Length: 150
Image (cartoon, rainbow, N blue to C red; front, side):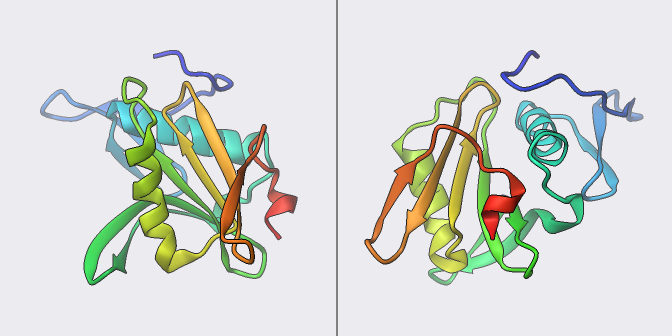
């Protein structure tokens, strides 16, 4: 499926059950290729190749506790100090990015308190910078380069 991102090459393979898997360079393993995973792999490659994010400072699908409930974020980019700086939520291309998606990522951010929230379905990408002093956020025109995460 064509996304609103540069085109990249990926390693894929078929499983014994005829499912397609894609190699995740960050997790260093093959994972089932779902529409959401296609967006994740392309967007993370975009962050590394075009925006200068070190692959070693990106974490994918890790658990966290929010309001005593187990949750799992899609991806987090850390700054050079090892602090979470950008929380990223991925949806399949056919999933509309709406208020509910932003509420989901905002709930995860209660725990992480990152500077940037990014949401993408591969077609449309949103990024906002949090301002904790003023208790609001500002939508940005572009995804920040890695150097802006500091």
